[in-house]
Length: 477
Image (cartoon, rainbow, N blue to C red; front, side):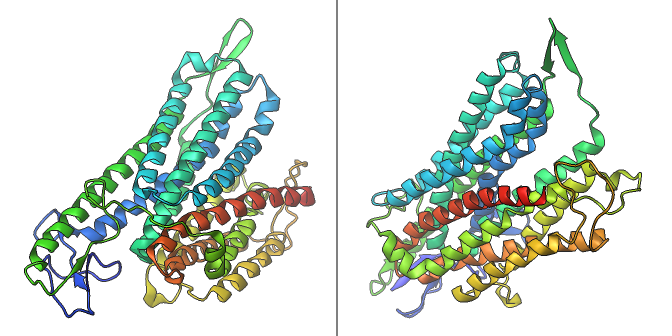
């Protein structure tokens, strides 16, 4: 049987069709965009870029709400109680909603069009962040009573979380069928979405001054913030670009299958089989035909999803340590050792490590892609050792204002290296898990259902990890 599809790891040297024996595949990877005669993009490369952009879009909303915490601290300056609970409430609403909705989506399988789920989720994200952008520059929202605006804000967080669930569920189901290299693209995109906000935060700290406030009849109003406005608009643009790329790549894939079909049908002895991912233009969109129960998926993927759960449980200690560990150069007047720069730099360091771990898994020859599920579980559990190692650094309890170094190992280089390795281990583990899921499933229905199955454990891991982080905060204090 001949399969008409661009290979996930091997590209053809030209756009022609190579007819092989019945047990071999047809390699068909046409050029879809040409810059110069020597510089061009093939269909498989376009699809990798597409899923990388979708990966960015999946994590960008979360980073938007986190990065805007300083703006909302000013916005709720007349209601200190809301300032204190903003981050914890945002995380709780997001993680709980994601866990519940991901479970629901994982159970609704039969007849589901996963490309539609991706587009619906990204469309909702566009709407949410256009509203959020307007709220930063509109007097209607700025002058709204704090409790009312806070309720609207948390509602937007809730809708954003469900939108991300839709897009993530559809994306992981799709890449499980396409192949591990495209799962790698999604993982890399999510890491990029972590690096960019950290860079933006450091740059804005250097170039932005104190923002003035308006006073009117004894009431303080935060100034219109066009910086946050642009940041929210960017989230919408990322989602729009992702949808356009998905449409473009699916269109070319459909056209490629039809052209290949016309040529191969010249040989009646060969019966072609279309690629599983087809756009809405195709007569055969990617729709799951059979329900796959959790028990079947658990029997095949239990060690992989257990690794995902354990990995994110441990990973969520990172924000706690990143917020409370300061530079050992306590007497330095340099801005680089002050909290407003040092802490964002640590976030950037961890995210660069995470990105590096994910990218390197895409190169099989390096041997960093872990394919043995037992090894994955052992690796995930072993990451707990980072917790006592972080405690050797310059930890400052949240309840004190002391700036004297109390580090057991009095070195910023030691702490930075720990965060880099912690990030690399997270990227390597989660990417390995998602890249090999399809290899442990027997058919496309199982691969598609596994997309929702794995995201459930990801959500639960994040939720449990966020709760455990509170215990760590209590211990540090």
